[in-house]
Length: 200
Length: 133
Image (cartoon, rainbow over all chains, first blue to last red; front, side, top):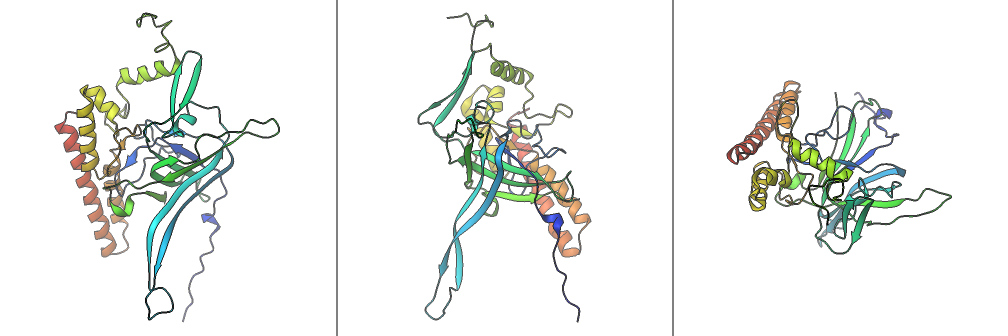
């Protein structure tokens, strides 16, 4: 009898930088955000999209479940596993830390208000209502740079707040961790986000 | 205090931010495809621009979100809803049905395509009923 095919395929590695965006439009349940041919969010569907700029070491993304293992008296191992929570996030270290109008104002949800007038841009700190944002990490594919992979979270908040470094011998950077939340009354299987890539 | 009409001295209008935003609002084209005139994005802000009534704007936004399967999206969210996503997904699934491996796969894709078509129709019905451009 014949054997089975091995799945070693270097076309599916990631060795490329990505772009992180916030302020994206939320797609219908089961659908995906609209991309332009260059991999950026299409501007008619996503008029408020904001790119977060340079990072010191690229981006990490994850969606990991917290599971509860249920056991019965008669078995030595758990008989069922239930996902009770999900930790989904996009995180990195931004370096454009004085970009208040394009970057910082979108990362201070729940405690920072942006304003500007002649001569200044500022973020005032206090207590305000939390406004979530849809975020996505987008990067070109290894085997076709005109096609892109997307990790999209529909309802995120930056849990790293506002933090920066001012130094001469290295780039000042600001940790960002956009954590995903669920949109209620959305299809249960598509309430947090999606991970997809374009194919031919 | 500077006369509001004296733009050169009024900080609320004499700034890059204000000029950019004013241009978008005046054009009324935020979220609308300039070539086809089709609306691809909806926010409470845009609805308020058209209706002048915040309660109405939020109500229409929630109706669109409910009709299109977007979920319970916060009306304050400025990113808005990608209202073209359902129509696009419907076409995409039709294309997948054409390339299906077998009847099972084809019928699944066709069913999903119909589902997204229904969602899109529901969205467009709400927009038409509310007179949203």
